[in-house]
Length: 194
Ligand code: 5GP
Image (cartoon, rainbow, N blue to C red; front, side):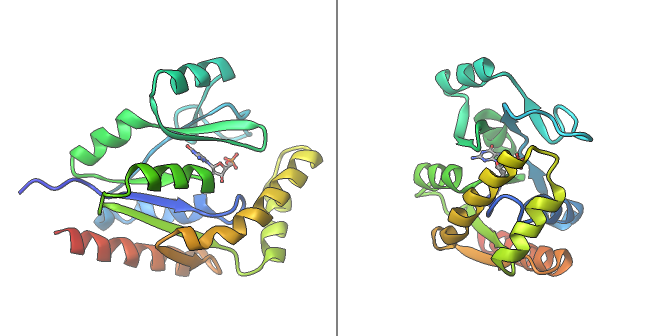
């Protein structure tokens, strides 16, 4: 019998550790999980590779993609655009793959609006153990200028209040535990979709 893959949204404030949890999840072959690489106008950070973390594009190229309807959702986040290429997500789901989007809150709301009738959508909000913990993480990992860090912290404070939009809220206290809880949620939803 044909089965479409799940569309899994892993979201939460910037700096909460979505990327680290995502890397753990992708390693778990039983989840049949494929990461959707977003498009962004943000500058590449040291160690990032075009086509691996993101497709890094100019603002005019990003706007072309908006105008031609190529993006499933997009948002402007602290001065840069981020968006999910639509065709790839759909193609993967049609192949039966479970697709993971790692996106911020306003993009999530767009996806939830568009797919409100789709039982294959799973939305998960990753939350820090405390606001202080989140601030420490943003400061520690950032390679960006102070004013951008400040803006990211302000944004994170408002995003922290958005857990109620999601089907599941998971505290990222330790990566292993949080990734385990998210994996259990996904496994349960895979089972329910059988
Ligand atoms: P960063 O610059 O730290 O890589 O990402 C900033 C924020 O943008 C993070 O919260 C990240 O999850 C989010 N983000 C990454 N890709 C997308 C996307 O395609 N769409 C939306 N709406 N947010 C994204």
